[in-house]
Length: 429
Ligand SMILES: [Zn+2]
Image 1: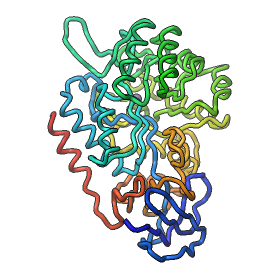
Image 2 (image 1 turned 90 degrees about the vertical axis):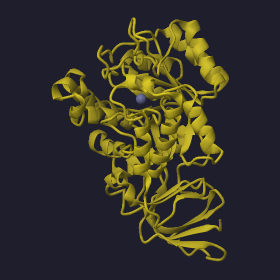
Image 3 (image 1 turned 180 degrees about the horizontal axis):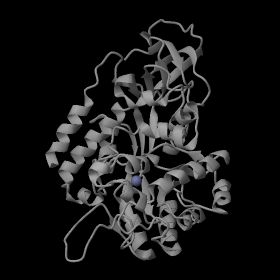
């Protein structure tokens, strides 16, 4: 492909500052030059008139689950055969790219090898999809979040059950052997399940330590599900890189988090809390049930906790556990709106968290900004998302999607995605 020259665009470069008019030249898979105001030479380049729209970096989903296939209950994920599950994962990977997410930092795969295989297939150019940091399944204890077994009832699910430090160590080694980029371990319980134990730890210090030692020694990333205060403290003690949720933190935990602010990424995953609170009634979660699950308390906490963590300079990223029936994949950009409405980010700050910080959590050099020499993951967006992040929720507003210098959606191309994803869902229905 000839070098591509985007002209007549307003550039949001990912830093969080106001967009500015300019031109951007793409050569190969990189941004060659960003020119404020414009004036770049046209020779040899294909000129793409952006029509005054906004050019911004592709977004990162920091808590993605492309193999959570819009199910009503976690248990259902264990009822999808491997083959159908892989197809669904590929479809949803593409749907997220169609939705403006050029990078996914996974917060668990439903089956051990599924995301690893999808990542490899995308990287080999065999299927379209975002950059993917593939995760292990949820590593959990007996009775922990994700353990959907029941006595006398045969069931395999999404869980990898490991009790005791030695078993945790073996499980982490097993996942690493199969090629995951990141280990996900459920240190606390959750309020979304019947037992409602979001404030309790489900792993001991020794078990968490075993997971951390293996992950650190073998150079894979380490992420955890941690709603309980004690769980966040364990994660910090053992130097987890990504800590999800933090709903019930208190006291010195704020200071402990701040001490590690340059090493830790946080993602509250507001999407699932919000939709469970307000939009899940057709799935049996009415206001009373949602209240029992403490969804309204958790939303209030989100606002307070993350308001404070934001002031302390923590890196907080959008990504909201999309993949449940009432919080479906493809609607992931809603998390940016939640950041604005619930935590109090400005739209530009929410966008910067999804782009600049996205590049950082992906740990890919030169990703997440529109800047000379950076990787060309770009969106051309109809309108100005720094005034209203909601426009990102409509795929029709994504005029152009580019990943690694290649067009996924050319300007002027019609969106054709949603239908396809639905067809594949019908494979297992
Ligand atoms: Zn999750």
